Length: 381
Image (cartoon, rainbow, N blue to C red; front, side, top):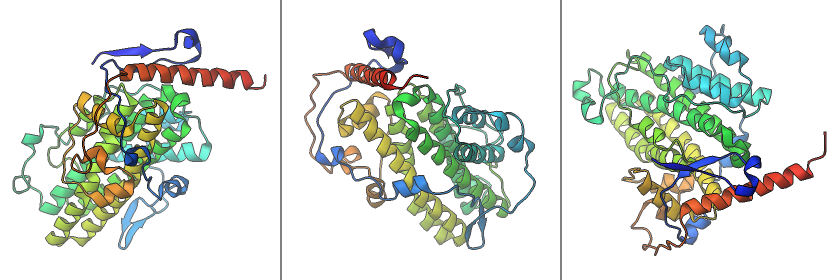
């Protein structure tokens, strides 16, 4: 997709360029539910929570890992121990192929950033995250049906969830690393939230991997698809599109599917796995809420209506939005229904008077002016 580098001509030296799509998108007003959304009530508490070390699923639920020597070695030593910024550590996680090591490094990276107060920094994300030799990645049509997979139904569903959670680690870290050059625009809170999401996802993968092993299987025992990373890759040049494609569509699908998966596992007679899945689904509310918060924030900076911008980006980036929807979970996470459910509100007339690219340019100039004023008001030394 073509892109343009937008700068304010008179202040280009003060503001780093940011690439956006050149395709004009409509500018439109939106309903009050979109402009004044109700954020998830637990968002601030989630942000302020201490580091979550409950990475083992015990007899009664999550438990902290028992003290043990640091293994594998690369988790304790090597590049991760020497990294000096959040973005640099995120790039190392993305470059790690072994799933369990990736999970442990993800937790270590977030822990180091929280406890050592490291800067966001600036790093380059790999073109695609490192992956293990297994599972074999195939098209969705080639994923075997449960009866042909060689796994019992509970292990089959758990393997699929483990694949989602492993991808989710990379999706969150890619957002941190890829947009790290624009930390002054987005603010530290953006990167703190998505590093926190990556830490949650690494814990979820650890639970899935542990339970698979208890059932006598491993992640990689059946093929999987690469749809999640494909959605991530096509939004690599636009932070607003990334927020739409990943937390507001892909992660929101987890809110839709979670309860159904729990009921299937209960019907299968596996209460231990159903409890793990229920806990993961419950914690995904925070991740969708983070996406809503930062999407609304970006839209406000661009003076754009969130509802219409969400729909325009779905079309431009060919992001598929489909139900059935879990309205109660989506409401809790703060996604206004008129963003995704066309039956909830009447169609709003679109005002095509201003291309979105012009809005981006205006935003760049405004932020540049703010940066200049901040520099002028900063005490010398």
